[in-house]
Image (cartoon, rainbow, N blue to C red):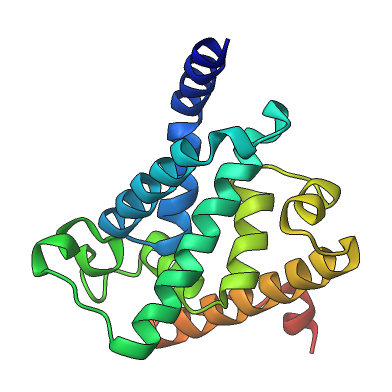
Length: 182
């Protein structure tokens, strides 16, 4: 019986890998760190699989593990610094794009990287994972009002960061209809 539950868990875990990797890459920005986080997350999930009571919550349970590992990594790097091999940067979009190409993807990656972990997390759960406020609140263990607040502030900070990126890159501002009337 335990063997069949473990096999069933393993199969369900495998189906979650693409979404988990996508979430990790969006959260951290680079594929090398994202792959490490996913691997550590899977390792932890396999060790603690019996602690998952509701199989329907597997995706959110895995995202929670991954997010906690990411926060732990941020704390660790804050105290000792971050070492990274130059080869790991080859796949990083923010380093691979030419400096003045003006592409939206480059600007977006830099703008997302400028957000706090809390704002980035809520934006990713809404935009990337297509979750609603109630699902996000349950997954993160915070009130719905906090989700709404973080989402609104995250969107505003992302918008401001993108506008700042466009000004730095020399993009031309096209005035809106209201600006033209003034």
